[in-house]
Structures are given as C-alpha cells and as structure tokens.
Length: 325
Image (cartoon, rainbow, N blue to C red):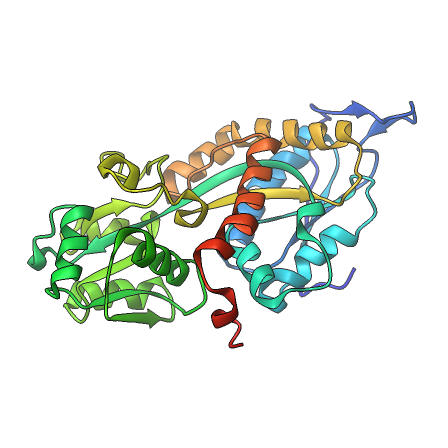
C-alpha cells in the first residue's frame, strides 16, 4: 500500500477480543492489520490513532500498522479504505462532516456511503466565541446584533471547510447576517484575531478555544452541538436557546470504517477492541492530560454521522458555488 508515512504498533500481551470468522475458518485477527489515516502525520486524526491503536492492538492480539495516506482533501485515503479487501485487515478513520464535505465538493467516482461504519471514538464540537468587549449575551443576542448591523464580521477557518459551511447554515437558518466571513489559516490565527479585537467573533473547536476562554480573553457564546461540550459543560447549544440543531455541521464525529461487504462479526470484533481500548488507563490518562476527549459510539452512530453529512449539507449549502461552477 502506498503511504506517506507508516508506523507499526508493537504488540504486547495476548488477545483480549477475538472472534470466530464466518464459515468457521479460524479466529480473527490472525495477522497484522493496517489502519489508514487519510491525513499527514501530526494532525488530530493521526494523533488520536497513535494513542488509541496501541491499545486496540493489545486488545485484539495483533499488530496494527498506521498508514498515513494524505491527498485530495482526505479522499485518497478514504478511497483506499473503500477499495481494500473486505477481510478485516484494512480499516481506517475520518471525521464527518470533514471528509464528506470534500466528497461533496470534489465528487469522486466512488460512493462513500458504501463504507461499513465500525464505531465512533471521539467527538469534537465547534463553538462560537466572542471578544468580551462586545458583551454578547448568548446566541439570540448575537443574531440580533448582526441583524442590526452592530456586528459585521464573522471569523473562522478557510473557505469551503466546516466552519465556513456552518456559518452559511447559520446565516440561512438563524438569520446570522454577517457582512463578511473572514477566513484564517488555522485556529490559532483566528483566535488571536478575536482576542486582539480584529474581529468580534470566531468559530472554532472547543479545545482550540479553551485556553483563551480560561484566560478571560474570549467568552463562549454557544456550542454548536446539541450534545454539548465536555470542555464547556455549561455552555448552551443552539437547540437550548430555541434554534434548530445543526449537529450535522456543528461537530466532528470521529469515526472508523471498513471496506464494503466486510463480515459483520469482524466489524463487531474491531468495535469491541476499540471500545475496550478507550477505557484503558493509558488512553484515559492521555485524554485527561491533553483535553482530547474520547467517547465510544456504535456503528449506527458512525453511519448516522456519515449519511447525515452527505444527505443534509447539499440541502443547506449551495455546493455548486463552493465548486466554483
């Protein structure tokens, strides 16, 4: 398999979670497994993989080689997962709605919805954060301030990404009538711009804004997931304040997927391995120390995140415009 980078997770201990292969052909897994990360080394998805996969390896009793396959806005790696043999020895992870947005924009000649969801392992909510000088009293007040013209700029990450699309959805659904979307290259510069007063408001992940909020440089206006934020547990979501839920675009749901037609007992074995791995002291300690939340969810939850992204976003956002058509 071609890959930009790879790392083999060393196996230690005996198998804790294994299953009989369908047809009675022995136990699964009986050889090493490849885990595809459709991004370069060092990013969030890669970081999660390198912390979680050693423990999954221990649970399954097989080595796991992490394969970084970046390219085509994460579609190259996603396509490799889909086109791999459905034998359980290649799976991978990406984060709806991020990769589905790339899929909708670039329209490859393969069907992402045919991937077999395994589970979810984390959730990263986005939120709206404001410079305290503006004294914004929640999401309704924020909408009113934009409608009155008191506020004009809304800041986030690059155009065509999740934050940009979330801003478009909120403009259409909530009446968040900003005059200018200011796109920054990364959460750091965007947060810095809001702290300095260059822009009044920024949308980014809860973990990215945590330090600025704790220091008093920013205030939480809203968390964009109805499931809330473990970083800011008291922060309201749009649905808490009378607005429509936008969970399909308001959070990253970190998911794992197998090739289509993989036997379901293999999927279940992998899912159980991940679930057990997330509960280990090693992963829990890392999560507590870094703020990278881990949260297991079923294959149904992963499927819902994928399908909702692909089915809902085109109804809410003009994808042709994003494609430059």
